[in-house]
Image 1 (spheres, rainbow, N blue to C red):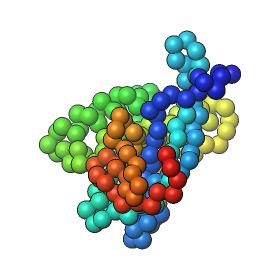
Image 2 (cartoon, helix red, strand yellow; image 1 turned 90 degrees about the vertical axis):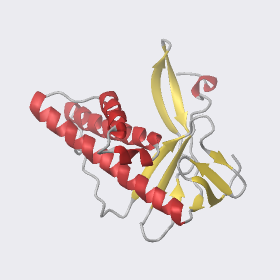
Image 3 (tube, rainbow, N blue to C red; image 1 turned 135 degrees about the horizontal axis):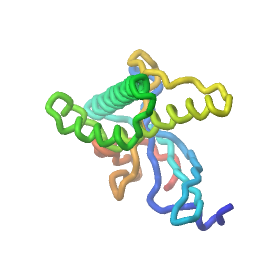
Image 4 (tube, helix red, strand yellow; image 1 turned 90 degrees about the horizontal axis):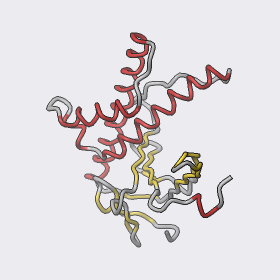
Length: 196
């Protein structure tokens, strides 16, 4: 078991944007979630902790449109690459890795037909692909161990719960007294309930 000093890596703070209903305008970010993940680093197994905070945000109309665009683009990316994984598995019996799909997504963002994917935050896409990969891996791991884990489902636009996760990279996310700076949204008015 690693010591407490080995657990924390600086700069790995994740900020999640969530919405309960599309019409209510109550957009939120996730709160105080510590996700522990064992990863081998340099021959040692260390803990990786992600910490996030939950603040109620009050986006203006342009920011609400951008959040809705990011919701729909992340849903599209999830569904597109889930269908790709299903079709490749049926044809070859092998799965496509998250990294192959990430490279393909980067190419898709530069093609004219799907250039609209550049409108949303790229780290939200990365997290969407990571979530898809973990859901897919959990399904097959459950088959091997005998646990009942459901197959990943396609995301529906009729769902009343939309979310995406973005990651702090250097200084793209900052929390001020009465606002938070988020990627592709700029400064969003919020109620900061605790000091960071």
